[in-house]
Length: 162
Image 1: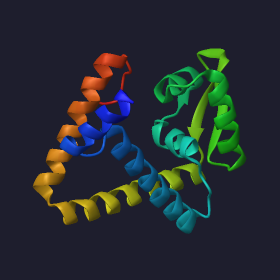
Image 2: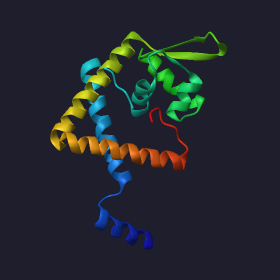
Image 3: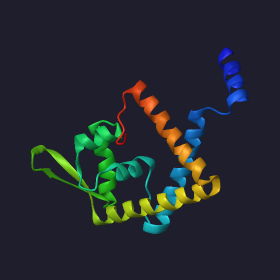
């Protein structure tokens, strides 16, 4: 009872919770991305596959690096990589420095899909910026970066940007 009352009081003062806003925004962004990728490249991607393609460095990464960057286990990464290999978006090869490890790279098709992702991102962000205004858009990104930094300090999760 108290939790519900506390939440309703919070919402009446501050609006919906940050996690609910972020969840809805993420759902809408993923819908737009996957819809546009399918239209452009005729590829169906789920959220995890999209995130993996987007996170994989252009030079390739070993399994441990990619799993750490995605915040998942090597076992979960293995399943994710298999799905992307089946779609011919990434490939694996032996790591010349450690034969027990594999280097994961984008294929040519995967690089085309990453290029599509970049185009969609640019178009979508410009669309949002045009609707809310450049100043407010930059302030929003600055605020989101600050929130991310605050949360990173509390969780210990490392992101790939400052």
